Image (tube, rainbow, N blue to C red; front, top):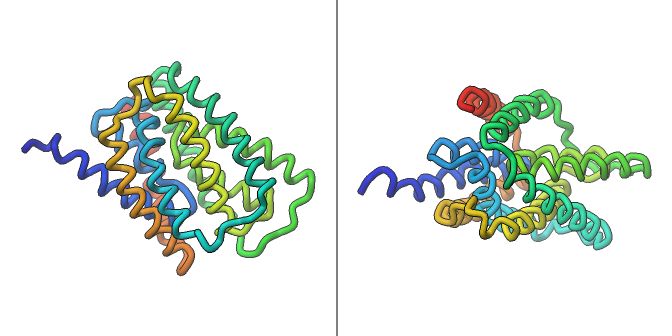
Length: 250
């Protein structure tokens, strides 16, 4: 047995860890998984596409943990789904055309640019009443960030959660759940669009899905019970390291 044979197991373990962080922090697992996929030999585009398949596990685990905190606003859910479908279709087209090195540099720059935002990220505790202007601004930002999430990685999901808190008046836990719904629809559209593209590594994706299912449930359950300060600090440190590495290795 060579070390290559152990890579699927490594994918499972790393995805479990990343998904636990993501479940606790309301997003950010992609900041770990995308550089890891590149490290084990996938191109940046393959890393993002494979991560979309694996993310089904994280989303499923998180939804299982949050099942008692589901929001019943059907109109708002349909609105999120529509935005996610449009963003997913646009992202899948660009993901197949963009240069790998350009995508890697873009990911590195974007991750580093996110670090100050993560340090100042607002954490909602109680719902705030959102105004019409706030929702309109939030819709514009949400559409843009969902598109960026589609072409970069699931790590952008931390920003999606923040948009729900700041512009739509959601609590942190509500934002986490809303983000999972949006990500599920977005990633389904992208994976279906890329099924025959050759960008998805199904072995890594399925092992990642298994690790994500377990990690997403564990992390989300911890977030519900205890909060996520430690995971947030650890994530910021890793984001800085990953961003520098992606730019330097491009």
